[in-house]
Length: 51
Image 1 (spheres, rainbow, N blue to C red):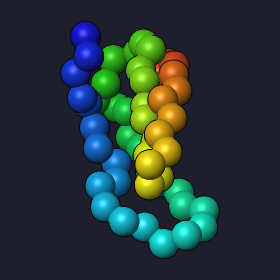
Image 2: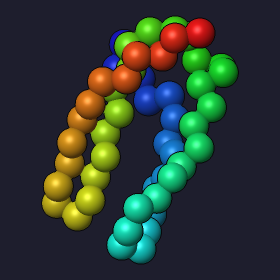
Image 3: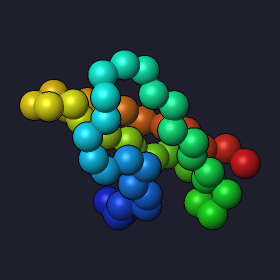
Image 4: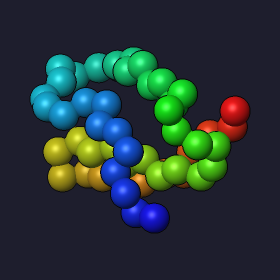
C-alpha cells in the first residue's frame, strides 16, 4: 500500500555497528520494505514478517 508503518531511528549515529530493536506485534504478516540511509547512500530491501 506504500504506507510508512514505523521509524526506528531518525538522526545521526556514531560510526560503527548498531542494533535497533523492532517489535512487529502490531503489524500483519506479510512483505514489508525497509530502507537504510547513510549519507548519500541508500538501500531498500524486503522483509518477510511471519507470525
